[in-house]
Amino acid sequence: MSYKPKTVIEPFKIKMVEPLPLLSEEQRATAIKKAHYNLFSLDAQDVTFDLLTDSGTSAMSATQWAGIMIGDESYAGSQSFRKFESTVQEITGLKHVIPTHQGRSAEDLLMKALICEGDAVLGNTHFDTTRANILSAGARAIDLPSPEVKNTGAFAPFKGNMDLDRLAAQLEKNNSSIALVIMTVTNNSIGGQPVSMENLKAVRLLTQKYNIPLFLDVARFAENAYFIKLREPGYEEKSVPSIVQEMFSYADGALMSAKKDAFANIGGFLAVNSDSLAEKVRSLMVITEGFPTYGGLAGRDMEALAIGLREIQEEHYLQYRLRSVAYFGEGIEQAGIPVVKPFGGHAIYLDAAKALPHIPPHEFPGQALSVALYERIGIRGVEIGTVMMGYRDPESGEEHPADLELVRLAMPRRVYTQSHVDYMIEMLSQLVPELPALKGYKFTYQPPLLRHFTARFAPL
Ligand SMILES: Cc1ncc(COP(=O)(O)O)c(C=O)c1O
Image (cartoon, rainbow, N blue to C red; front, side, top):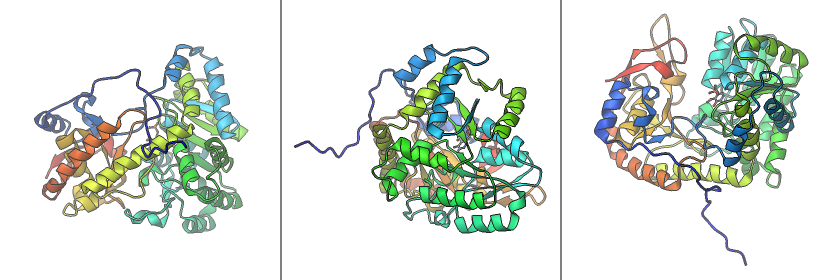
């Protein structure tokens, strides 16, 4: 008889460590004031648990570090590019692989190549950099998330889905001005929620009917595939790579910020089937991004990416990844802070509107909660609410609030251990009684685009 463990362990052992900055509450209060209450302006050395992002923050494996040493740094046609190219082709089934230094440059190139002034780009929810690239190419970014998103506490297995009725209506009414449709898997902006295969297939059928290209934003493709395996009938026995292949089979192309599901610290790509689109992108990219066989990356980066893209699909890793994120979420909920459910793949999203009902959207409850998490515990998260997703009307000066007021605590891959997580949960339960006394914030400066990165705030 074999033993049946309940604990899902980290499927790796640690070879190299770095010290964790441990500061007093007074030191943190000084640091956040100096940063104008914007967590992006803090020095990393002042942060104990850096949950700002899972992007570019993964611990690479020994095999990836070994790959770094054999990177071929030739300007054109390097071996490392060929390895990267064939890996992406094999995983995605897409023909042309164009490396980029990160996800947003793939977005920029795609939008410049496909969009005309006045077009619209539909999506299940565009990520903020995607939205900014669509807007700066002169088009409108339209989000059509599933209606289940509004109920942040309710369980729905695939809250990342596209609202098919609204998609069909948009396609029927405006198809001549819709440049493309983007499905983001998993759907980062609404809680890292997965998209089902059924939904992807349905979106494919609708876009095909109107001859509109369908692209996947696959920053977290492996996490999405494992959710499909766990939750979608008919996929329980399928391997992750075969689920991944099916996901890509519905797309005309894919964009990836490889700083997530490739365990890499930098990198991205655009992969497309169309020869003419690939040619257009390659001629655009040489102006700013680099030659088409390195696209802003070093050969060693492409080696690490090729290895990481395979490692991420290992099921022991994915089981640990989704379970350890859910463990954190369960602990936070038990501590008494409302969270978005079900838990996303890469992050836990705190519902700041419910946690701080006394702070209205225009006083930024998510910002207030994130500053408190830093000051009291040393956790750096990120507001995904009115600061990031809302906007100020340039004429009236009025703030347009976001649909949700969230704080994202993103888990870097293979970085923090279970006792780090236990410590954070313990400290969060001590923060709960203080929540009713927290105050809102106001802008003292905001830039016109992507304001959350560089805005400055003052407490009210
Ligand atoms: C879904 C998604 N798309 C695109 C991006 C942008 O990628 P990058 O930060 O590599 O430019 C991100 C980054 O967080 C993301 O989560």
